[in-house]
Length: 276
Image (cartoon, rainbow, N blue to C red; front, side, top):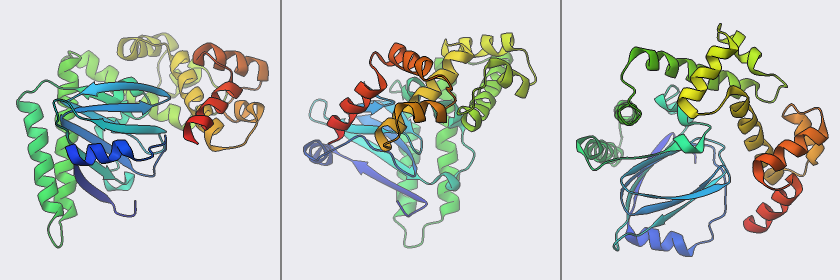
């Protein structure tokens, strides 16, 4: 995508067309937000596939390997799709969702909040139809969209007290530091020191938000990158393990099989057959 921003609708006819097209797992150089008004979505992301029923919001960050198939429900499908370059809105409230699939899709109730998302998308679409759209207006509307989604997420997670808000900020900072350093052979203490806190407190926060320890989250990020490299490069398993911070080939192989249920070689062969 060359544009900074674009928005379009997927209706029932377009959903049926997409279903008949070759649709391989892929990644892209932009951020994508899908807002499902009606219908369902089959979403393959981080090497797992799930079906979500509208209303929902799904965010896919740049570089994620994924595949989206829009599905009709009661003969209807109605999605907004918003695509934008990272530099269009550098700071969003979606850092929390950028790396973990379970947080990437949020199902809504058909309430006032979700109707406002639809209204905001309509306003953005109408602005983009102008001969010379005001991108500054679009940017502000998009910021409002993210703010409303974040408000709903916090309601669903009972995120209403100051302690949790502080935890949320710390967790986002942890994810940001992790993204810069996950290829290094660093453990919990490294990240805790970067955040000026104890490893015990950092573990308490990650357990509270994702029900995973810091070590598990680090390992998850490493393995997602390993899977990306297994598909997108011809590097050996050993080379990939070393690139993401595993100096012991046998240990990397053991962790990969334990977490994925298959060896790295088996995964590569299976995914390449799927993609081809």
